[in-house]
Length: 548
Image (cartoon, rainbow, N blue to C red; front, top):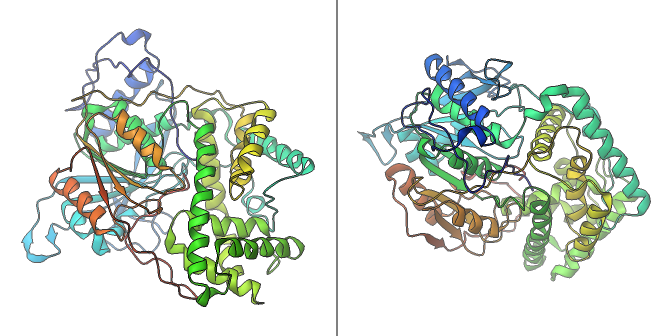
């Protein structure tokens, strides 16, 4: 899974009232000297005051920041401390993008819409950038929001040009073809253990002492500095996937700084789940979503000819894995690349037609659609490696992980018996955390009391695999006064601004008017995609969340 946290502080973190705090941003009073993180909180206040005075000097976006950006999308940087406990020490620069509110009602061009401030978006990861986010204002589902808000994206610390992290040579990271056994041999396990150790060493070698400062609490602090640099007294924020986790950390650390907050596809914030147990839960949920996809393919056997039952579709997939293990398609697509391509179908059913068509074509003698879909691309290698490095650093730094291989082996062997689709690949993704060279932290207890926080809107799909639904229920329990909107019998990861008009109605009502339904509300599922081949993937307006 992807999410994170920091130090624990019995109940909620007690904060000292800081003279340098911005308007509307007092902290909770209490025994500050004894509270873990007090130095970081003081450092945040220093950085916030500095950012408010400096602002952001927006100018033209580079091709690296936002490729082919329209002229009204502007980019700049905000400066934050690498270590908030020492705010006068090393500084890093986060890239930011913004497009001003149109202030034009898309339903009535003659009506001027009042500007409500800046809306900051994070797509998750850890390791994903939202520099492209301002472009979403052209999509019909987002036009009313774009009329009222400046749309603001940014690259979090470690991502893109924001003090980037790297753990290995990008060319090595996308080396293909690779294996992906659902029940690995002891020899294969030893090989992956060695790779995990080497990857963790590479992170330390390439990043040095700064590695320890890439954490979810620091992402939350960076968000407060960004808020101040934008000139906002209170934050309006939409976080998806992992973005819900550090959004919840922000709400816990800075409740009086929150104006409106949307948590879309919520990570389970229970400290006992961060992160090892969350990843096991994720693997189990992907098995259910994989079953949904196979059943959909079976219903469209007339199109894909992969079998009229989910079991027959599975046999076809297994056949493809075996063939690819013997001979990689296009010299680049082996079982590992097949798995990666089909894992995306667990995130969004918009991917279902293209995957089904590619599998069908391959099994019927045409590998080209699968190669187009699954072969790694050299031009995206650096970005992919960077995202993986940030993901690993944040999750490994955030919480304790088992350091005994026997525990990993026992838990994943047991789970793979009932959930083979993603279990071991997920384990290998996270195994560097068993050998992590930087200090581990205790997750913060995400929790707010009645009246401490404005209502938070939580969105969740009932069959979401990347952030299983119990996490949304837990988030709803922990943030007092929050409201949970559920898309029933659906599994797309990241549902705000997507094809479900009911969900979008709640999103618009909240962001535009501050209205929320009762403590919980539900929406019927959106329609599944039609069976077409070759498939035309999503042109809808949802912002697909990051890997977590």
